Image (cartoon, rainbow, N blue to C red; front, side):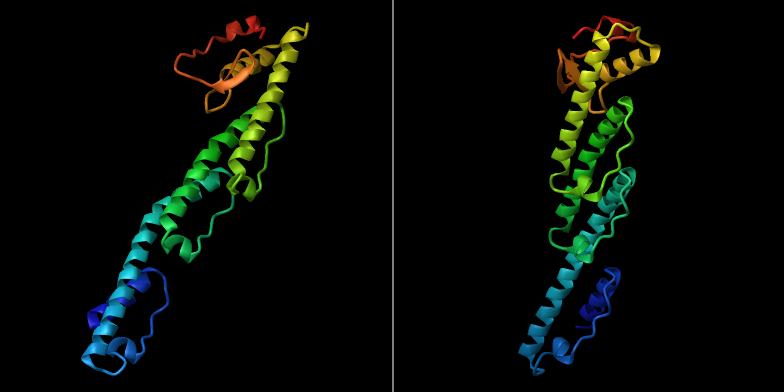
Length: 213
C-alpha cells in the first residue's frame, strides 16, 4: 500500500491538487481483515489509475491550450483561463481540440472582413468574446463577410458606371478586391461570389480598365 499511497500524492502534486489526507480505513481496510485490506487496495488502485488518466489528458491539452492562447492573442481576445475540469476531464482533449479548431476557422474569416472593411474605408471592427467564440459565431461572421462583399460589389458597379476618370488608387483597389478577394481565395465570377479553383488565373492590373461585369 505504501508505494500506491506515495504515487497518489505524487500524481496529485503534478496535477496541482492539494495533498490527500487518508483516513486509516482507506489504507488498512474498515476492520483490518485481509478482505477489507484487499478492498481498500482495490479502491486506492482505482484512485491512482484515475489520477494517471487525468494527468495524461492534462499533458495532451497543454500544446492545444498553447495554440488557443496564440489564436486568441491574434484575435485580440483576453487570455483564456482554463478550469481544472477543462484540462483533466474525460472530454477535455476533445473539447479543447474543438475549441482550437473553431478559432482556426474563424480567424481567416475575421481577416477577410477586416480586409474588406479596409478597402471600403470603414473603421476596424472590434469583436466581443461571444462574437468569435459563441456557437453561432462562425455563421454570423460569414454573413457579415458576404454582406461586406455585396457592399463592395455595389461599389465596383458604381465605379464602373461612373464617367469620371479613375485614379491610380481606385484602379488598384478595384483590382485587389476583384481578383484577390480575401485570404480564403474568394473571387467574383460574372457578378457572383464563389471559391477560387485551380483553373482560375489572376489577370494583371492593366486589365482593370476592361472590367464591365
